[in-house]
Length: 266
Image (tube, rainbow, N blue to C red):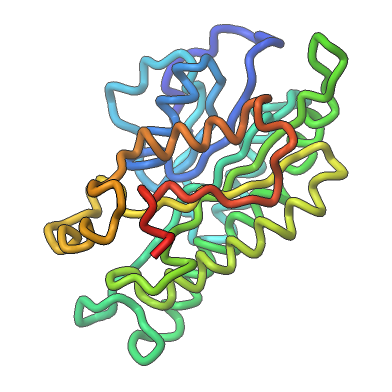
């Protein structure tokens, strides 16, 4: 386990977020946003976190995890819950995902690629978020029962990172990725109903074309299909995630926020 910086002691007023896929892109931007808001952050990803982030006093724990391996996921859940003890988790963000290519560098479609690869995509993109929701249900429920200074339930939140590709055909996403994200959208709605009794809201954020290291020149022709005529930034996705986790959105559950610059309306 990698611990970026010593925890500055237990602060009952500080909220805690658990986030997957934290080392780069949208996940890393989301960590930065929550750290700016003084949340305690517990993360996991296959890679270690960037060296310059290890001094962040809010990013207290990072656990290297293969999120495509169910045993590794369960080990992460155990370790994180041991770290948390009886403390609540106020937010869980299921960000990690994979969109692999076939042996001939094509995205996995219905007519190409080994079915075992499809199963790996679903394991990470669909079953891992489900396992994490189950694994942190008790800790989220502890936050869901807490009351704020006005005597109102503060609640807890789960945010699943889905995709515009789960709703429209995307030229670069591939069928395996797209259908796994569509499944995660449906799972979000089901989780919202079941977790409501715990005081936990469950929503999704569906990004469109976001400028990350995965975006290449082949994405440029998509920009004319975006009403805002530009790609989004990881920080803009992180902002939507944060808003879904704060008290201003305390009556919002079972919904999906499109961070696409309007691309999804076509």
